[in-house]
Length: 547
Image (cartoon, rainbow, N blue to C red; front, side, top):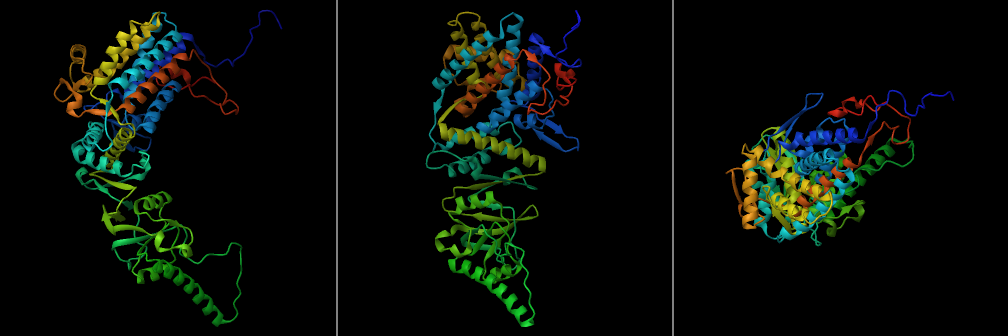
């Protein structure tokens, strides 16, 4: 090799960000994501309108929906969006809180990095602070019984406040608590999938109702069938009510016309026998996961049986839970013991569509919330609010612990963390203090979004917490006063807070550990393709120009 000739390791047009540049870029991307959703936090939060290439719009202030729908290129920003998705999956609410705290932790970390505090020390300090946070949260949490309907309703209403469904929060709170209470299993666990949320526009939010049973977006297979069946005995079939075709390609040659008639009659008899089996079992309503032959429909109608075909598997399982029916895979096996019960099965028109209502089930372990709203966008936003509220009520029933809302918990945590910081030796103390300051972003943002003086509110909150020692003092954004949030009914599950702070800390630590951003080959082991343009990484651009 000739002397002085450079050694080429990476392709010449690859951009590589190292050390402080990489950290600055990642921190900035994370903070931009946090700033994007910050204005949606709290009861007075604003909404965002998301528009896609086709001009379809979503109007929402649900943090996770905004972040999921946003077109984001930056790799660090994508990592922060994962925080929101995890929060949504685990607890159903608190997504905006998690992302906003994450952005603020990154901002505080950047200040420390500028003072030449090493990222590893910042991370260690954050970990110490997180451990202390868990300890403090456990000490200030309030116990709630699973049958305390009044408190559960307050939790649901706190979650709904500030979203599109706020004006009907009292009624929705009752519906959600009743729905979640219905699907609690014997171990006290809740499968949220057993609460079906069906959306229909064309009516006021107030007309949202809870159906103690299942709502199926289908209609009767034959108009001759009864529209309404009281004291329904329900059969659930996972097999077609049709003549089975042969497994192999078979050809039947018929030379005699009489034989042809015999063949057709035999098919008819088979169908009639199937319907007779259903009738003999005592069923007057049939839900079939597969098809129902036209002739079988005729026989079912004559027998006065209401039948629905091609019902989704998930709906069949909910019907089984709600009515107590067994799903049968062979009609011959159907007995009276396999039938489920419901007080009423009827076909009704909702917003111009026929739907089957299975109501008045005795002890339904699956229920349906029929969400109404004037337009499609309103219905979607109400459904999102209901989904979040179901999550928080379910968490509370499972864990039995709540904390005060309105920024009260964050102020208490910040105050106690500052005391704790004095006991921490070394530079980690600075990181613990930074963590405490970062938590105050929540009450500060609540005040800003309500048009209040954020500094004045923070000072008042700190004074109340230090003077009276009551961790429930938070910010009432409607009156602009510092009040006892538990008395006001502004409460949220302990798990929402724990998970939000935990995810925010872990994602911040992950970004702080990165000191080098390099173009990679396709990470699944394929050949290197275009990694987008990393040129925009200082802002919201992608990893572009890297290749």
